[in-house]
Image (cartoon, rainbow, N blue to C red; front, top):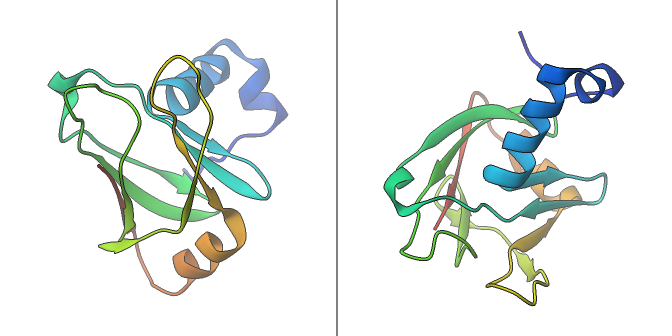
Length: 119
């Protein structure tokens, strides 16, 4: 069953846990105008794959975790780089931001599940 969220998922115990995992562990924060990409994972989870909806499209996210476990160096959609802006974090390497409009366009150009690789 497709699921993107809404007030019900964010106001229940399971919904709160889902949001915490997606936003703070997997590092994907969907906002209307931009996507935040800032995973924090231990190196042991290198190669982790997750499937979830992103702006209404099915996406497989592949994590290539470096030794630090945070601050991605590159984000690829089906092998092609996304245009990114650096985030801000004074305590560690920051995550990245991708503008939502061009990302939505690229996601809509193909059929089926798309692949985003975070390296």
